[in-house]
Image (cartoon, rainbow over all chains, first blue to last red):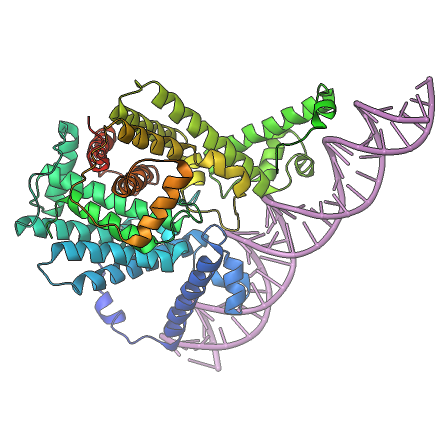
Length: 247
Length: 247
DNA sequence: AACAAACGAGAGCAGTGCTCTTGACTTTGG
DNA sequence: CCAAAGTCAAGAGCACTGCTCTCGTTTGTT
């Protein structure tokens, strides 16, 4: 499993053969059809046989391209993570560099918009774990952390720019054990913000997704909130204050 | 659906026949086994045939007692809602009547403790909707709203007792459409708290469940937070401040 | 041209939800 | 007290699922 493949320079430089191109295309088709089934029927009902039927091929043939159902789920997972990450990046990049509250709101609204647009994909990423399925961390961690990395980046940039209130109200003590966890995060992500701000950031992170999950998963009753855009906007306003983002 | 059943006094007063008692017991066994399967394999993998095997009976026999798989899911849903509601009620009742912050924290911690103890049930109630399954509102609404009703009760009692900060910081405007939704809630639940407090309460509600869902669904990485009790305590402290609960 | 890899089709196994029929049992009414 | 009515478990069967294996065929390379 080492990466030492000295002969690869010659063998891998070749242009793709028609067969290879067809294979790549078929896998892309399988992912596309899988996404459609996911959107319509949900993750638990994702059926390789149904995908095969839509692909116009017998069920066993798809196993030439996808190892098993979990493998397809992983592909869809990565695909969805990246689509969400792209949407978030685009939304945040459209905000001026120094407008940290605007970036936070743009990120949150992008997540919500994507979640409402693709509820089944959102459920796959942030809902109940699929029983018996364990996402392979080495393939999903990087795309799966794009949003939180981006959010932390906004908070930390705001802190470095002096746009993050150091004094949070009310002051809540942070026990040493939690401080250790936060210190590890600070070291790994190369952050500057103090414990209190980081902890606030975590709460804001979970709160944003909590609000979106409630909406997407129908935890509000069907008629409790009709002005859901306004509700989310209001929640963002409060959370912005919780985070200490001055705007 | 009215409660007026004047003839019931005679016909329903009969003691249960042995057959009826056996039937009730069998249904209880099915629910118990279903809960075990739910806890081990998750909702999507809940199998009537497997329950039948554990019951020592052929699969078709279960259909004498439970209409179909969705019906069993509904029974488990109600069962779980009530178990959670009982746990929350017991935790809140153990706190002195005037200690509203303590009641809020007790409620939140009870929800989290139950969620960690019964992750599959929690996922069934608050995770991704099961595809193709629609909970029958007339049977699940009452048990399903016990926690939020209790939480709102705490907030409103605190407001009436003058223990809820009327001035929330930072002040965030509430658009008219959202105010309408909040007015409807206030009317239906007979509340006194003003719009800003209600809106804060909704945010706190979703944030508590967001934090719990992140933990139970494994959205934090496997090693990001080791001091999860402390993290949750901290989040409750901040949310208590967001809600305006003075303690 | 010869060969090996890749491929699609088909059969088959074990599992699922669910329906229907059959025969046995229990309860109840005449 | 006995037969009719109601209830029950069992089994066969249908359509679906994931997945494996084999068998020819196609494709690309040597």
